[in-house]
Image (cartoon, rainbow, N blue to C red; front, side, top):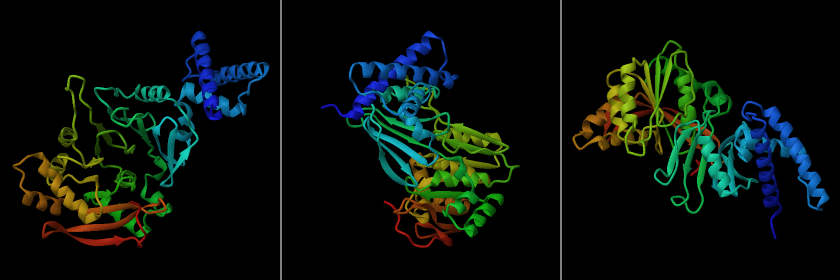
Amino acid sequence: MTHPLHETGRATATLVERVRERLRADRTDPSGSPEAVARVARSELRHHNDLALARGLAPLEDEPARVREVVAAVTGYGPLQPYLDDPTVEELWLNAPDRVFVARGGVSERVPVALTDAAVRDLVERMLHSTGRRVDLSQPFVDASLPDGSRLHVVIGGIARKHWAVNIRKFLPGYRSLDRLVQLGSLSPEAAGLLSEAMRDGRSVLVSGATHAGKTTMLGALVGACPPQQRIITVEETFELGVDAPDLVALQGRQPSLEGTGEITLRRLVKEALRMRPDRLVVGEVRDAEALDLLLALNTGVPGAATIHANSAVDALGKLAALPLLAGRNIDRGFVLHAVASSVDLVVHCERTGSGERRVAEIVRTTGRILGELPETETLYRAPYREASR
């Protein structure tokens, strides 16, 4: 027996195709005329229901909802569009065409969306259309920025088991200020004042934490606290920060072509950024040999800010001291340790609690000295204990 949800999905897909055919015949651009799409969708829906009733079949109920669904499919990203438009949704992912999840407030939930493999591929192709990036057998992974600033990550079937795996991480601009994070309870007013003063004074700040702990949001808030006269250069593999400032240049890396040429790495971007007279260099995420170039830049007196995956603030410093060793065998660990201790002023460690809340767990400052195998630190702020999410 066919599930009613699948029957409705097939009927809606047929309706979408008829609407597209009419728009093509009328030479109407759906992206520029959503009102026209709604009119055609309403007309086709009523025609469909008249035929269904005449044949003794179930009609498509809830006309306004069906019309919105068709308009989203034709002008946006189909059944996913309502969740992308929902300001409470932070992230959306597909494990399979009929297994779709969203996260709100750090808590995930499955949503009643059922697609097909072909529909998922079509949606991904439309999302990538304006990015200049692609995903296929020769390049089975892709990271790209959608027009609204959200980050798209795709793994095709064969690498992912059976179905394509799609993840869309939204970056909500309303959270990109320290004051807003205070209102949300992510950090105390005193901690916000400490960080704001650090950015004004040109100190270098490292933001650490696990995945989904709020590192990018915190980094964006720190950039927002920079003085307006500062020239800021941001460097990212894929545009995620979505920050703005009077004098800001945002740089993004590039994947290699089919021939294996044309790649632009974070290491190259950091070096180019230093030629652009930055008052502050911002690296979206440090996870490879670009850590060496960042440290060299900080040691020339250019203030920096970056994120790094780590389990604590001290662990973040240790990782930042280890990553430059990936740049080559001639890198001296002693030099790197002293470079970290002398050039990184503060570490802001973020965490996600068991309830999904994201907050600043601790802020430490470096003393400039080495203690054993790690830079010595002093704790400036520590949040009340709550169990972190793992």
